[in-house]
Image (cartoon, rainbow, N blue to C red; front, side):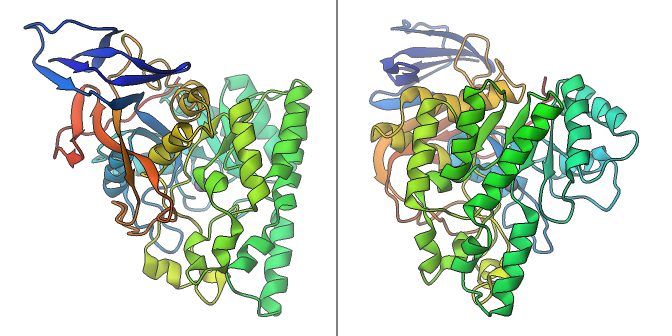
Length: 448
Ligand SMILES: [Zn+2]
């Protein structure tokens, strides 16, 4: 199948450029000015006045997660929402498995969950404890294409400093990336219990129980632990505040190597949302911060300190979120975001708040590079997978999202761009805003 995409404006590092794209089967064959229309094309699309970007890669999702309450989206509904949001690849973070389970337990389970996912996918491993053969287990998964693992400094399976050092040392040796949820468990538990005893249970106390310094302390500690183990592939998930960014900025200036992720909610929303009647809808961890933190995230994105914008998509139904309306400690943590990320971030580019380079790097290129999918994914280069997203210039909002959560935390923000069409490996899966049913089934992506 030979396909030609004509007359669109391709987003490059330097801005928008009118370029045509030739797809041959599943790959990009040519990107250049004025490819001539000839008989060799089976189909020609005219994308005059449309924007073209590489398929979005979201490296932080939680589909089909069960935290005692089941998430609203599984890999089918989450994958469909992703398509409408211009994301063609995800790397999912599985939830915790049974106590003492082996490292491949959750991966095998999730491979089964994702069988019908309509977009391409991979998984991060999740480290819950340190068995004596952890090195062998990590090596085995690496040979199966799982090259990143996550550990937590809070929740049920939190790691202590010595365990983290052991993991960092092995990961450095095996050239693996370790993603870490950085929040100080003690501070959070202490404040949560204090507010509970004082009957301060409205949504704003969720934010107050997880202050910015509880994140910053964990960030500082992890940097020192990484330094101790000479580890240079530490990946900070969902960094939310200025205090953390200041510490990360200093460490970077001092020459330390690590990666930083943030999310659209930390750029565009702030803790005033918790004061609204439906404040519980915005409960996630880390919590929304202050306006000055939004500004710091924007600056760090443009300076390149933040490498990746992912979503931490972890959607629950309104009913489930409402179970925490009068008690934030009962509200499942997480918000949807998989379909909002690309339109919102592209709007930020159109508004001049972020550069073309930061958009491409944070949403497409760096996710592929850092997590071992480049050059197959993340770029519109010759021989890369033909994962292509076309956006139209259009004001629209997220009042009727595709996510089974059926609400959006970004519904009051007007997006300036809407996902018009989507190709995955040369297959058109969204055609002029309409889903093409059964056009493609996603595959598991072994990573380098
Ligand atoms: Zn997460």
